[in-house]
Length: 340
Image 1: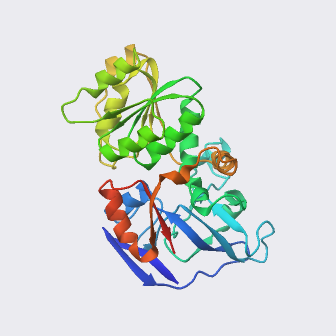
Image 2 (image 1 turned 120 degrees about the vertical axis):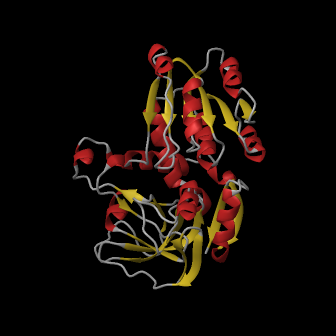
Image 3 (image 1 turned 135 degrees about the horizontal axis):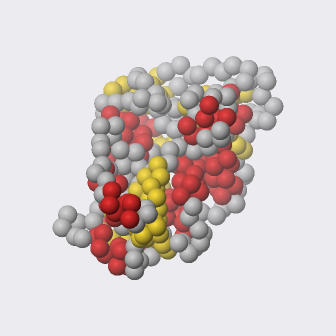
């Protein structure tokens, strides 16, 4: 089969590789659509990922497709089923799984390989995080399952409720998914973004105010003024250390900060201890998703609550994956659909 193989830093090669063979408890899926992702863009730029994959490797993890083959012990899926799956599943046996913190599972089964004609879904994911796609849901919408699961996890962990005042740093794909989810539950949302085109997208999606970040603008003061005393919640969705620091400064006394964007391993932030202490600010990091959040995301998709496919700004064939990542890195477009 044809597959996009990550071989190193900014080194993607379209290669002929062996079509995966499956065991009795695995499923082979023909990819109908795979979506670009900010995490995949980081993996492309850094030449790998310490948790998810080692090079050379077929990569990509947001996808939807049609079952090509099922193992002899598979009962819930059959050839021809339209399916979507998350990119991991927990072991349910380790310390963290036993205390119901499944996103911290010490033995997560990860799945990469969506930028290809076929993908093999391992037993753990088939059993826990793979679902049928109803006939009235397009593949492009279903493929948002994994990033939506992560966003649902973040929204739940930070305790967002109707009427809250929230500022989102970043109008990339994740920031915009946060925006769509928050507006669906009637939250007041301000979006901060340095890319003018992406900020315009946020405005078309219904943000209450968009702030274009410029080097000399005091946008922190502007956000606090817009929300009177500051935001109830700040969501950091860029993975930039400076944005982590700024998020703390944009919430009111008693406010909450969600650190969602993953920074580089070597990055540190400076913490204003007086501000955090005397303003009683709560800060929380959230990573990945859990089976419960994957199921909630799936339910949102099949109930047609969000219309996430409007974030897809381009569709390309498999042999143009490299072009897609160069576009994403430059901030051109939001999500690109790869159609094998």
